[in-house]
Image (cartoon, rainbow, N blue to C red; front, side, top):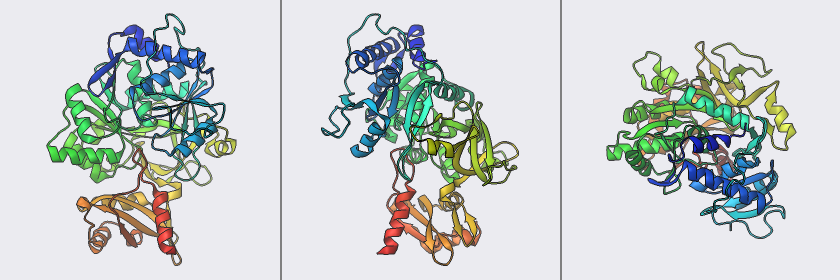
Length: 507
């Protein structure tokens, strides 16, 4: 059940098929991909004393070596610890230490100063590692069962210390097999472009593409540039990528400016943050039936619900707006419930906390039994997200539990306020949070980025809102910014916005 067997199988079946690409240049076929992995695995065992179950951390930007090092770790039964490359080295060092990693790979092997890592951990250069052929040594991956730990993913930590999510080989296989069932069929001619961080969702989609012998493409920029994605699509064809909604928005803006209409793109899978209906309409207008939505979280990676390209593109259906505003139906391998405060199931149409169970759900948090007990209850993962199921099984998110604003005793869901404001033609981006209010408990504050960096008129926005939603949900305050603070995979950092409000109130 070692997921590295998928690479071993692909190399045996399709040795000459193109595997790893840097931009449009092929770097390795599947034979040389697997051979490099075996050589790196040999180094990990014989030079660095890595054993089954040991943790191998990766603190690197996107690159082909990222995939090679991950599979080398799994080949010998070790555990991959992917770390967001945009973290400060002190934050990354805390993760390395908490995970008890044996080695950490960085681009050049010189990120951490002497003494920053424990004596049991060695920093190594990950870029440009080329190994000699090793004959039959480590010819096949380490044999392990489905529960063997494979992926130790640390949550973003935007509300406190990040927690290590323990995902097994079985978790990763279940997630991957759901992809062709519920998201997108995969063929050998496909090219998966890693424009979003490989340490997160984009990297997780490698597995099913390896199993099908598809191409893996790292942009030359090693990150996301809309124009670069378009060029890769034109040159390679059949390009798929995972993109946060902010990335999709940038792609739409670039396409409008250049007249690009999606040529060469097969699929854009979006998720990780809300996609507002106005932005989705724009994306469908530009790219056509190429968008698929997924909803998941690190604790059930990329696999809670999905909304197909057909449902997103079919705007003639009377209920299109309602369905497109949802996150789709449950993935094939999971059950979804919506629970009240007492963790009792709610009927269709009633909002509560979303819970999920199935073979994609994590085994728990690394060395954190208290958090595990709070989050895994009777086999159900309590997601911390608020939403409701309709009578057709479509799941609609309203907000995170912690983000609900209680103003004058009434619940205000930031998502619904953002949806209304995002429809205004002068609004480019918007994020809504609550602010302490001596009279109402909390009041609604909207942070707005105007199109062309021109702030819309506050009175115009207020009138627009009142025409479309109850007045008690209207923002009491608008704050106009040049851009919203985001982490490396496109999520708006609401904690920073709340802190800004606190500091402004205290000054």
